[in-house]
Length: 78
Image 1 (cartoon, rainbow, N blue to C red):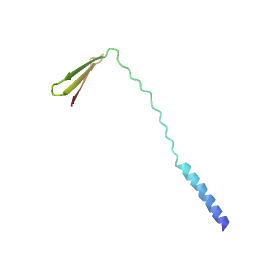
Image 2: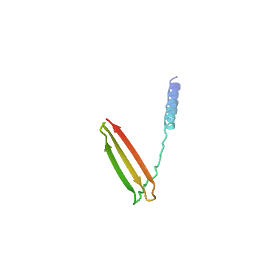
Image 3: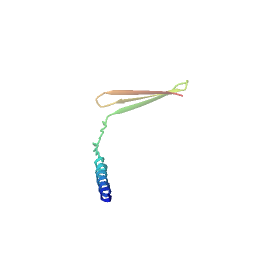
Image 4: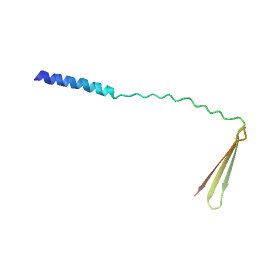
């Protein structure tokens, strides 16, 4: 009887160790290097306005060497 309990305990220990190693997963991700080249002839203008009602607005305009223009306006009120 004692040998059967010892054998059962040994088998459970072996199967438990195998189950623990089977759940280990390693995920490796290599991120590519990101390089952003800014054009040498980019123009940027910033305009800030404060209004009498407590609001303020900021406008940023960028123009690149090809003549493409991007304008972003943000407004905040207190």
